[in-house]
Image (tube, rainbow, N blue to C red):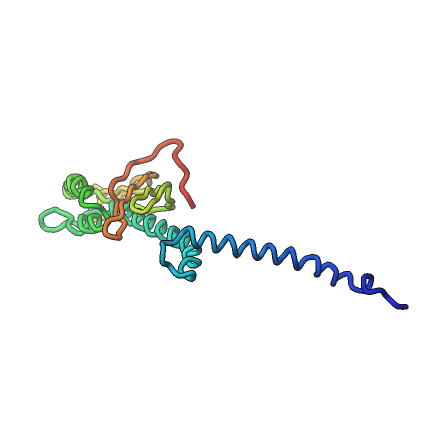
Length: 206
């Protein structure tokens, strides 16, 4: 039995029909890529640089978000971890001050120094300590030189046991949720302020 070309090769006919459509799709994608590369790049950039900029844009922004969130997390952890073990002979906590100051702006450092003195007084007089942990972070806003990061976690205060001073009594853990504002100064993200959040707040970007 002899078959005609059309009946013998239905797969070939389908392939011949699909190839032109696929070519059009590929050409359209390449054209869009070239357009985006040209529109996002400065004059004088090579074609390779322009194409690369299309893919690097999202990666760079994601990296900035990660760095900002990491810095906000470090700030909250350093701010909420202190106790008698950090006191020096002058009943001050220089290491605590240094660790927090490393991740904040000079403007914010002025306010922090005032509050640090109160924390030192509480630790020295009552033996109070605090440990904090962070559960999650997320950016609610970010641009080239500023960011807002939501930080959720809890902290636990402790004090000496009156019956056995070498032992400590922990209070119940208290949850917190902060909005941490950061500024980028000389290429480094630094915390510029933070506020407690309550109720319905803006959802963080993933």
